[in-house]
Amino acid sequence: MSRHRHAAALALILTGWLIATATMPVPRAEGTMRPPSTPDSAIRSEFRVTEKHGTRDAYILFAQRHPNHPLASEALRRADKAKQHPNM
Image (cartoon, rainbow, N blue to C red):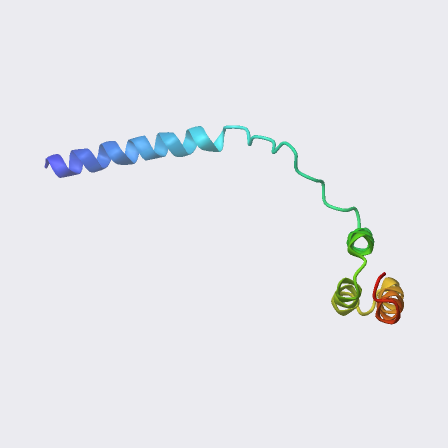
């Protein structure tokens, strides 16, 4: 019999906890970035990071990741230029 009383008490505690946590406000994450407004702006943001790296491999990777985006051809052009001029 005492096992059932403990189970009932535990169920009551868990139910109270669930109700309490369900009504608590979700804390706002500080320092997180908002997502880009469009997929295109996310790709353009990634291209800016690729430009900062400036390596042939970075441009090729960008073009492979986004083959149908207009910046893919620019990335391949820059990768080819970096191949011709290794110091770039």
